[in-house]
Length: 152
Image 1 (cartoon, rainbow, N blue to C red):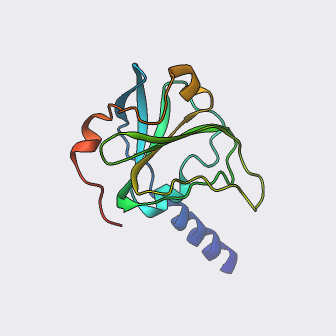
Image 2: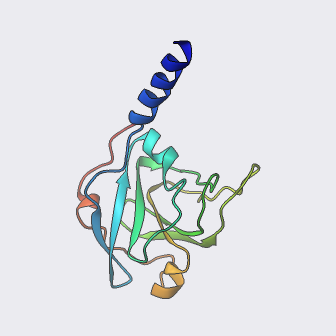
Image 3: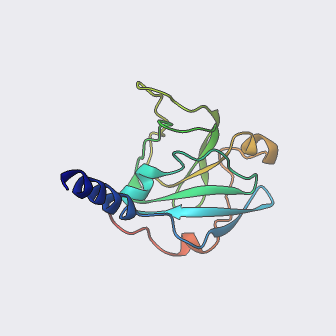
């Protein structure tokens, strides 16, 4: 009976892990349409794309942080390489990290910028180069930039 209770507790915890918003955000990056899962709470940000084995060329994840945040991203438990796009409150691309590899075990490299930003976008490795994305560009993030991130 004790084992059964532990299994039920584990299942309850797994079911309570927040998922990305069900409807992806449609944005334009480098003139191409992308569908980004939006994560805007601490638990879903921690989960991110961990465990994913594949990311389509037109898909990604947008991490929406509270204003004045300087997030740190690492690739622990990732299975695929990604491009990381750090974007400020005005949708300006602040920094691009390309072909960021997964990290199997700590210590993992930490990716961050020295100034506050609002978003980090993760897309498949090679996307930033393919689209010619560079620091200073303004991205079209659609409806997401019209509302402040929830304070968490």
